[in-house]
Image 1 (cartoon, rainbow over the protein chains, first blue to last red):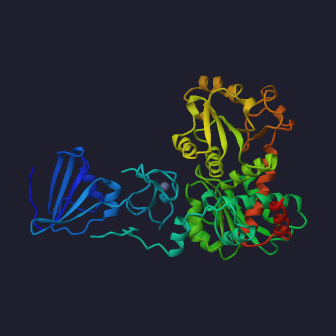
Image 2 (cartoon, protein in one colour; image 1 turned 120 degrees about the vertical axis):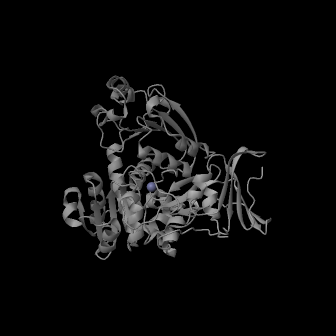
Image 3 (tube, protein in one colour; image 1 turned 180 degrees about the vertical axis):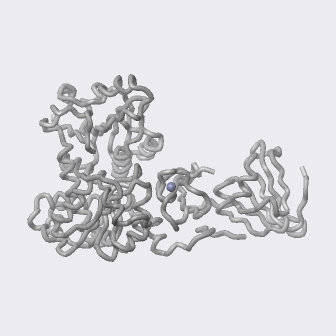
Length: 139
Length: 360
Ligand SMILES: [Zn+2]
């Protein structure tokens, strides 16, 4: 299904169905200002249902952050209307200031000036935990 | 296309030292001699037991046993040293243990606890307090109600920091005391059937002991609890991931007590239950008394992190199987071993003695 084509930019494909807006939020891409096409709950051969994000004029996407929020996503780089490169997101060992610890007993809720740090605790389960209190990361 | 390995979206970049402290994996090495483990721990902090290799834990256990039998020889090991005990919540027994340990090594202690806190560091961040106190002392033991507080402290301090309990998170020296008690009773911390009884859901000491014993291997765990207080899945996964370890979950202590080498008792707290009836019904099932103890092996050791409420009847105390007050002594000995090691002071006579021990 071809809703919008882009000329120069990126396509983030195979985003888990229904999560495109969350993905944009973590990538710090503002839907109010970015030239953006979202296709949500599209049929997918691979996963049954998926979201697709197309961003015109955008070159930069943090593959670490993408790896955390949408592990199975793929990134296509589009130049002159053609896909010139494909990238897979990373499964980063560490995430710094990407997510906030939700544990109310965590020291990050009270100590000023420290960053939010998570580490990959279990790579098969894609499980990230807070460096300080070991609470599991939640989107 | 940004492909950073360590994303730093905002805030200051990590110093190399911070990255090293948190992210470097301790090298598992069962054969390194005492001297080299000594060297590598000097100046380091112990926030969780993952900061120690199994070889370093073994060396600390050996040191504790040396200290116990050579009290005079080690009495001046830390002459001129000062330990700060920064207790942001009261825990008198833990603080006394840390302080006695340093005093028995010839050092001194300063610090604050609970009520004195407001006048010492009113509204100051943990980081600033540690940067200040680092100028005064050679090592810090910190207890704080927030989870992760000891890691924050260790990153800010320029001297070794020992976690004396950070909320419900970690309490590594309690587990060291537990291991030292197994070691002194059995001469080993492997090839044991270890029963854990009571609240296995919320008891951090239980989880930490299981995880640490799994690093050494060859332990069969018998997990005795009501359905409401079973062991969390991630702890069971840890056992499953250890080929030489296994577990069984049961509800009734009496049915398994005869198989156990170790019985680790915990408190069953009233507030964990939805209603009073459930609590009263279950409470008595998880009380150890002289009658139940009769069914166990004569060599079984009963441990408890203390303080107890009623889960071990007083009539058990006089039984040779009761090891929970020994556990308190072992806690102090392990803290002596740890404090002297982290500040880099050698226990006089230890190296010769340990070479003979290891050879024997
Ligand atoms: Zn946290």
